[in-house]
Length: 85
Image 1 (cartoon, rainbow, N blue to C red):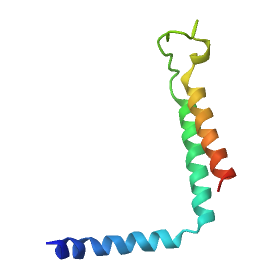
Image 2 (image 1 turned 60 degrees about the vertical axis):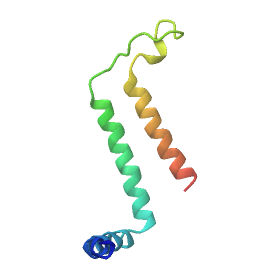
Image 3 (image 1 turned 180 degrees about the vertical axis):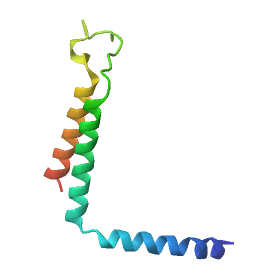
């Protein structure tokens, strides 16, 4: 049974292996940064989300628009990736 499963999955694994080896690490880094930047732009185009008042945050000034926090987190992920790459 195990051999049959392996023989069925081997062609897929070989295709995946060829794809991974075809992309250089620099190209993968560029793709990652572009995808994260595209997600950040997409988040900015979303409708404004206003969270309910949270206890301890006063009038909710820190949480006025969640889109900006999401973009900040995405940009931090890009920066951390570039710095520690």
